Image 1 (cartoon, rainbow, N blue to C red):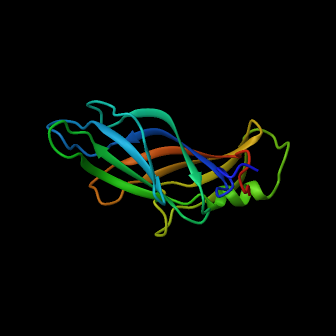
Image 2 (cartoon, helix red, strand yellow):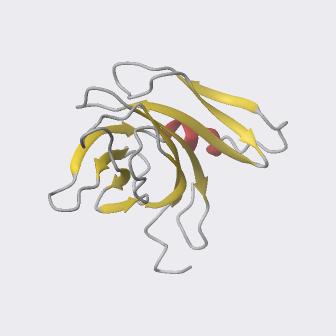
Length: 169
């Protein structure tokens, strides 16, 4: 077993798909990017210039050491001469995805919904989120309402990636 990966369970692939109605932080628009963080790790998307409805379609991979900790997504407006402006954040849990993977299901028809999470006071979901079996793997689509900002949502998809030498699920 590789000692490099033996302290992680695997990777959480966060596909940051798009932002919806993000806040304006410059004169008429914003230059948004997303930072995903868990524990002491931070990874970010590219900046999309002058767009409050950006499409990133970017995969961010987070090595997971603790499967009970939530992931935080923070949206920023890139500024050239001053510090970047915060445009809100959202947290999400991937425990439902982990629970579905641990069921050990195989050979389900593509598109099978295995479980679902409803929006509540305890999460940032703006609509129901389903864990779905597609192409031999479990994925979960989430639409997240940003907090601490006047408007904005993020659409993401998460997927668990097994890593050689990791603890595994």
